[in-house]
Image (cartoon, rainbow, N blue to C red; front, side, top):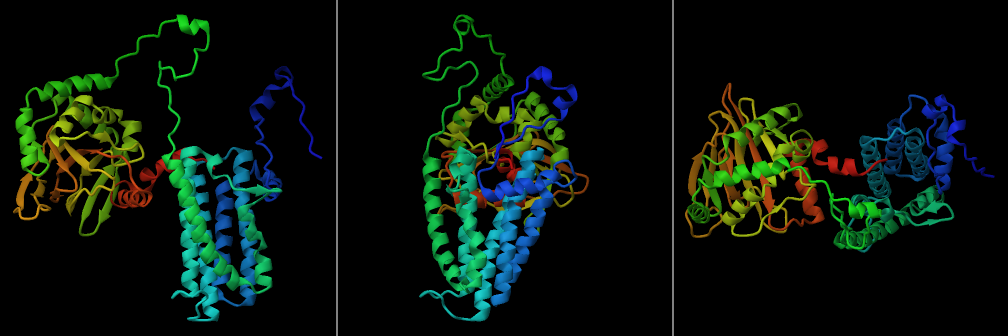
Length: 509
């Protein structure tokens, strides 16, 4: 029988108890989670962390996969027992994190990655085990082996994991809550796996998974599309009143709002406006169009703005992510996520209305900032070691609309050049080659899908730092395209931690 704790007044609580009392989260509804909490409660004040339990679950899960992959009745039963153990241990890390307060973004991501890996490999291992017993035998009237069916089921499960995570990011955990009956969830059906293997039903289970997992993935895709199309509730800005809302009190109605301090962005905007007065906008627009969406201005940013960008670049130097792709790229980068935290001046310049109006006039269409989760929206590139460079490429857009690139010179004590080829995608027009060195304050603006370009290698005792801004005409991007874009940025530019920090930051264990 569960007892209800009595309410204790604040006066009755001893000072020492106030410091050590830890709020107890609600008791879980699922039976396995309740048992997991009982077992891990003694570990609360020990050095055992939730990540230790996640590692244990991963090891047991990999052993389960290995057992199934061997094939045979005995190994399948061993795999089933290890599967049950692995699934149960999966509840212990989360329960320990909740009752001990040892939560972390890295721990949550580690838990998710382990779940996905073990589940995908489980189905692949089952398929390999069935294939080992009957090589070449087809379980379904399709030209696919048992092993292929297992991996199809595993890939479908991986897709389900990914989409459910994206849904949770947008609408919270309530949007991905599993069906629960009598304290058991949908995933708890895997606890019945020992019965399946005991009665030699592994082949039937594989067939059901190969058909059912892709079908369920289709349902999750439909749910994902529905959630992503749903408008998010508007957020009231400071000093604004949301329609239908009332002031908190009559005093709130009578008290005038305090004048807001002018943001630094206004000062930047004024400096950009002043710089634009020295530019023949009509001539610049004609040149941009005649060069197939490409423009170079050797002098653009005012010295005061350039000085601020140099200071920002120095401030985030310890956060530079070095990368090396043999034959294509070598250098360092810092993403917009780090710049937001350590160099907000860059974000203010990125959103300058005067700058965006100028770029829109050149492009001849409405431009929008890249979405908040795009690490490439604004970024710093560091060429600081001999040989740093980037090979010939296009700034391919994965958005539904066009993506324009703005390059600004920050530091340039180098022999590097931006080499480019115009009209490479205009049939019947001869390509035009060119090269420029954009010093501090210089501007290069182009359509990334049209300009073929590269940065030549850095020499000895040289340094070059540039700033890139990305603007789009349509900020929508498909799920698969977003995945490709993120992986490209993670490998070639910013590293996995900077690129996927939005996922880590929005979710907790």
